[in-house]
View 1 (cartoon, rainbow, N blue to C red):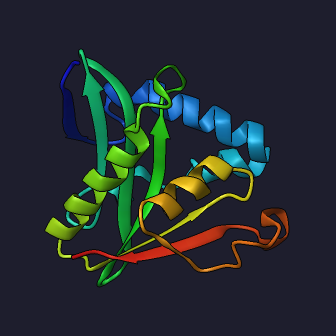
View 2 (tube, rainbow, N blue to C red):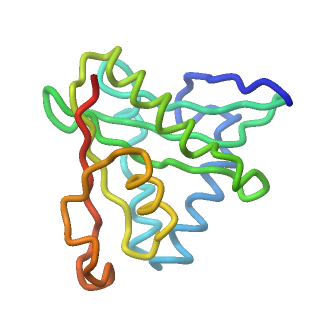
Length: 155
């Protein structure tokens, strides 16, 4: 088994480009123009001192990543958690979330907030499985709820 390297980068880093492109395509496929609009957020919000963009790199290739930005003084907001389509079903998204939580804690945040789209059941399952508290009715129809919000206290 190869070792995964956690790399802190800017979203504009060339190593992040394939992941960002695939994520943009996925958002657009699932949500149309609104999906592409999500990727228009200024990338500098994911840079220190308030945010961070991370990649998981295996054999020199970025295979998963994600970011956080400042939500409020005590809360980081996770964004852009993504595993490249060739590397799914390996627990990489869970690892990205764990790394982002550790990094957010090191930045002084005490809580994580995030939203995922109603057409992303795999993301909803990931956040439930990693201890996030849903801020919506999990038994409701996600398409009638809109963005699915979660939070978690980090220790």
